[in-house]
Image 1 (tube, one colour):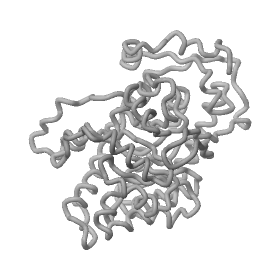
Image 2 (cartoon, rainbow, N blue to C red):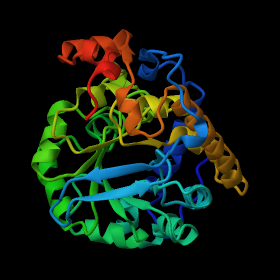
Image 3 (tube, rainbow, N blue to C red):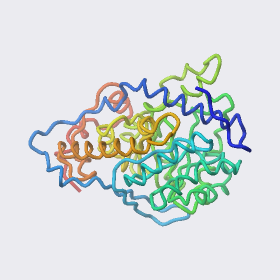
Image 4 (spheres, rainbow, N blue to C red):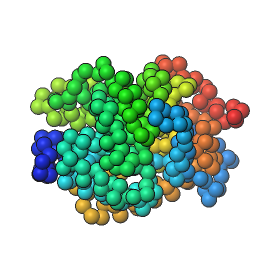
Length: 379
């Protein structure tokens, strides 16, 4: 599909790449099949269910103190949110508008795609500021890539009137990207500097390849209070960037990284507050991530597909209907599992299979303890 003309003043190749990413990401939605969410099962407790009317879908995102803020807690009314996707072109402005309207109407927190283009080329700012215009009272997350100057953090927050700042890390994507950087040596220092400069809490987010135990320890050590483990299994940015190469020579890395569930179950004690995304296809996947330790779950591809390829009017209404359906079904699964709250899900018994089980076993995760959590004393 032809990319739209960039707004005047925006670098055409950069705009074309953003629109191309949308097309390639949507193209992957038709390929969505089995992933590691299918490798996690709950032990069915036939007599432990609760009344769905008693279920509270709200979640508290508790995070530690950072360089610029005290320890805190956000209260979100749903356990899932609109994760960062796009922005900066005429087409993606329409997409962000529809996403923002749906977030406003359903109470979902919402992140945007990287605002770097708007900081470099002010004509692109409308593609992001529309989010706050359409959702003046909602919880909004700005987004920057690691490696940006520390001074960009407050600028990104100001652009959206943001409540939080996502800093995304994407070494695998950069490796395959034709115009990507391959110097990752300063990334920890960059995250620390961006977090110190940000006037709001920072969420470090992988773009689809997982955050390891070591990575989460590094983030905790530099004072990052929140991390989105962003695992393998959803929108595949390695595949997207490799498709932009005539020879496709980075197909050799297919399947690289960890899933969201693997990252959650492998997380160390003392890790930042954990969010999860990557491969979330349904409310059941949301519940699985919450049971594995996520405090909330980000959704991108499934919501983008509801909005539509070009963000035309009507996309918001379709997404509102989908989100309301997800809320209904999430509540039903909570009740089935005997969970009145997200915290109750942490006492459900989990059985791991396949690649997820192999990963966790090799990493020393106690599989028996996961399978017998309902019998452990509650704190």
